[in-house]
Image 1 (cartoon, rainbow, N blue to C red):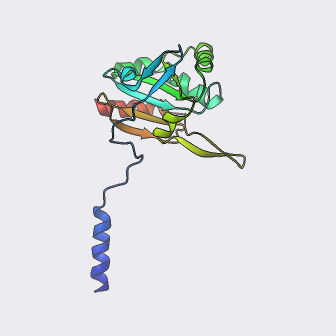
Image 2: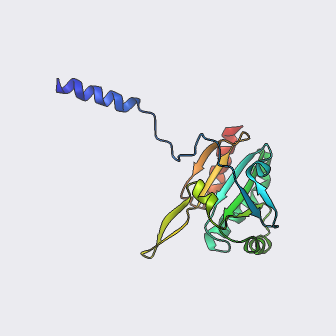
Image 3: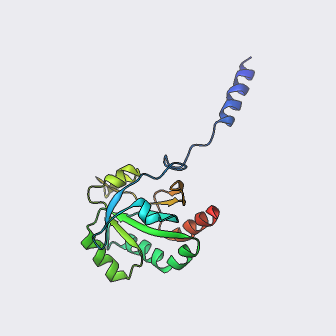
Length: 176
Protein backbone atom coordinates (compact mmCIF):
# COMPACT_ATOMS: atom_id res chain seq x y z
CA UNK A 1 0.00 0.00 0.00
CA UNK A 2 2.85 2.40 0.79
CA UNK A 3 4.28 1.60 -2.66
CA UNK A 4 1.05 2.60 -4.42
CA UNK A 5 0.89 5.88 -2.45
CA UNK A 6 4.46 6.62 -3.42
CA UNK A 7 3.76 5.83 -7.07
CA UNK A 8 0.68 8.04 -7.00
CA UNK A 9 2.55 10.99 -5.53
CA UNK A 10 5.40 10.56 -7.99
CA UNK A 11 2.93 10.54 -10.88
CA UNK A 12 1.30 13.71 -9.60
CA UNK A 13 4.69 15.38 -9.30
CA UNK A 14 5.51 14.44 -12.88
CA UNK A 15 2.26 16.01 -14.12
CA UNK A 16 2.89 19.42 -12.57
CA UNK A 17 3.64 22.08 -15.15
CA UNK A 18 7.18 23.45 -15.03
CA UNK A 19 7.62 26.65 -13.04
CA UNK A 20 8.04 29.77 -15.16
CA UNK A 21 11.49 31.32 -15.09
CA UNK A 22 9.93 34.73 -14.34
CA UNK A 23 6.39 35.70 -13.27
CA UNK A 24 5.94 37.99 -16.31
CA UNK A 25 6.69 35.34 -18.96
CA UNK A 26 3.59 34.75 -21.06
CA UNK A 27 1.85 37.85 -19.68
CA UNK A 28 1.31 41.35 -21.03
CA UNK A 29 4.31 43.56 -20.36
CA UNK A 30 3.54 46.18 -17.71
CA UNK A 31 2.81 49.49 -19.42
CA UNK A 32 4.84 52.56 -18.56
CA UNK A 33 5.83 56.07 -19.55
CA UNK A 34 9.41 57.19 -18.96
CA UNK A 35 11.67 60.02 -20.09
CA UNK A 36 14.14 59.15 -22.83
CA UNK A 37 17.61 60.56 -23.44
CA UNK A 38 16.32 63.61 -25.34
CA UNK A 39 13.85 64.54 -22.58
CA UNK A 40 10.67 63.32 -24.30
CA UNK A 41 8.24 61.12 -22.35
CA UNK A 42 7.54 57.90 -24.24
CA UNK A 43 5.31 54.90 -23.58
CA UNK A 44 5.94 51.20 -23.99
CA UNK A 45 3.47 51.15 -26.90
CA UNK A 46 5.34 53.96 -28.70
CA UNK A 47 8.68 52.24 -28.20
CA UNK A 48 7.47 48.90 -29.52
CA UNK A 49 5.51 50.41 -32.40
CA UNK A 50 4.17 47.02 -33.49
CA UNK A 51 7.63 45.43 -33.41
CA UNK A 52 9.23 42.96 -31.06
CA UNK A 53 11.08 44.75 -28.28
CA UNK A 54 14.20 43.97 -26.32
CA UNK A 55 13.75 45.83 -23.04
CA UNK A 56 16.84 45.54 -20.91
CA UNK A 57 17.35 46.84 -17.39
CA UNK A 58 20.87 47.66 -16.28
CA UNK A 59 22.34 49.03 -13.03
CA UNK A 60 24.29 52.17 -14.00
CA UNK A 61 25.58 54.25 -16.88
CA UNK A 62 29.35 54.32 -17.45
CA UNK A 63 30.12 51.22 -15.36
CA UNK A 64 32.20 48.46 -16.99
CA UNK A 65 29.54 45.73 -17.31
CA UNK A 66 26.80 48.14 -18.37
CA UNK A 67 29.08 49.73 -20.96
CA UNK A 68 29.99 46.35 -22.45
CA UNK A 69 26.33 45.35 -22.57
CA UNK A 70 25.21 48.62 -24.18
CA UNK A 71 28.03 48.53 -26.74
CA UNK A 72 27.17 44.94 -27.59
CA UNK A 73 23.56 45.90 -28.33
CA UNK A 74 24.88 48.90 -30.30
CA UNK A 75 27.17 46.70 -32.38
CA UNK A 76 24.40 44.19 -33.18
CA UNK A 77 21.49 46.60 -33.62
CA UNK A 78 21.28 46.02 -37.39
CA UNK A 79 20.90 42.26 -36.76
CA UNK A 80 18.24 42.93 -34.11
CA UNK A 81 16.32 45.23 -36.45
CA UNK A 82 16.58 42.73 -39.31
CA UNK A 83 14.51 40.43 -37.08
CA UNK A 84 11.85 43.11 -36.65
CA UNK A 85 12.86 44.22 -33.17
CA UNK A 86 14.04 47.31 -31.35
CA UNK A 87 16.33 47.71 -28.31
CA UNK A 88 15.57 49.93 -25.31
CA UNK A 89 17.68 50.21 -22.14
CA UNK A 90 16.36 51.26 -18.72
CA UNK A 91 18.23 52.36 -15.61
CA UNK A 92 17.68 54.73 -12.70
CA UNK A 93 20.13 57.23 -14.17
CA UNK A 94 18.94 60.68 -15.29
CA UNK A 95 18.33 61.67 -18.92
CA UNK A 96 21.47 63.83 -18.70
CA UNK A 97 23.54 60.82 -17.57
CA UNK A 98 22.02 58.78 -20.41
CA UNK A 99 22.93 61.52 -22.91
CA UNK A 100 26.56 61.49 -21.76
CA UNK A 101 26.63 57.67 -21.88
CA UNK A 102 25.08 57.68 -25.37
CA UNK A 103 27.47 60.34 -26.67
CA UNK A 104 30.58 58.74 -25.20
CA UNK A 105 29.83 55.30 -26.64
CA UNK A 106 27.87 56.18 -29.79
CA UNK A 107 24.78 54.30 -28.64
CA UNK A 108 22.17 54.04 -31.39
CA UNK A 109 19.09 53.07 -29.39
CA UNK A 110 16.87 54.61 -26.73
CA UNK A 111 17.76 54.76 -23.03
CA UNK A 112 15.05 55.49 -20.48
CA UNK A 113 15.33 57.14 -17.07
CA UNK A 114 13.44 55.26 -14.33
CA UNK A 115 14.29 57.80 -11.64
CA UNK A 116 12.01 56.44 -8.91
CA UNK A 117 12.54 52.80 -9.93
CA UNK A 118 8.77 52.37 -10.32
CA UNK A 119 9.12 50.52 -13.64
CA UNK A 120 11.98 48.36 -12.35
CA UNK A 121 9.73 47.37 -9.45
CA UNK A 122 6.81 46.55 -11.76
CA UNK A 123 9.09 44.34 -13.85
CA UNK A 124 10.47 42.65 -10.73
CA UNK A 125 14.09 43.70 -11.26
CA UNK A 126 14.47 46.07 -8.28
CA UNK A 127 16.12 43.70 -5.82
CA UNK A 128 18.31 43.48 -2.78
CA UNK A 129 21.92 43.14 -3.87
CA UNK A 130 25.13 42.53 -2.02
CA UNK A 131 28.65 43.76 -2.72
CA UNK A 132 31.55 43.08 -0.38
CA UNK A 133 29.08 42.15 2.36
CA UNK A 134 27.13 45.40 2.04
CA UNK A 135 23.44 44.98 1.18
CA UNK A 136 21.59 47.56 -0.88
CA UNK A 137 18.69 47.86 -3.33
CA UNK A 138 19.38 48.10 -7.04
CA UNK A 139 18.48 46.94 -10.53
CA UNK A 140 19.28 43.32 -11.29
CA UNK A 141 20.58 43.15 -14.87
CA UNK A 142 17.64 41.58 -16.72
CA UNK A 143 16.43 41.46 -20.33
CA UNK A 144 12.83 41.04 -21.47
CA UNK A 145 11.92 39.95 -25.00
CA UNK A 146 8.45 41.34 -25.70
CA UNK A 147 6.52 40.31 -28.82
CA UNK A 148 4.56 42.52 -31.25
CA UNK A 149 1.43 42.01 -29.16
CA UNK A 150 3.06 43.27 -25.97
CA UNK A 151 3.46 39.83 -24.38
CA UNK A 152 6.68 38.97 -22.52
CA UNK A 153 8.00 35.90 -24.33
CA UNK A 154 11.40 35.45 -22.70
CA UNK A 155 13.12 36.81 -19.61
CA UNK A 156 16.86 36.64 -19.02
CA UNK A 157 17.43 37.31 -15.28
CA UNK A 158 20.85 37.95 -13.73
CA UNK A 159 22.36 38.50 -17.18
CA UNK A 160 25.98 37.62 -17.78
CA UNK A 161 27.07 40.12 -20.42
CA UNK A 162 29.40 37.85 -22.43
CA UNK A 163 27.35 36.14 -25.14
CA UNK A 164 24.08 37.73 -24.05
CA UNK A 165 23.24 39.31 -27.40
CA UNK A 166 23.45 35.87 -29.03
CA UNK A 167 20.95 34.52 -26.47
CA UNK A 168 18.61 37.42 -27.23
CA UNK A 169 18.99 36.90 -30.99
CA UNK A 170 18.05 33.24 -30.59
CA UNK A 171 14.93 34.23 -28.64
CA UNK A 172 13.98 36.73 -31.35
CA UNK A 173 14.38 34.09 -34.06
CA UNK A 174 12.00 31.83 -32.14
CA UNK A 175 9.37 34.58 -32.30
CA UNK A 176 9.58 34.55 -36.08
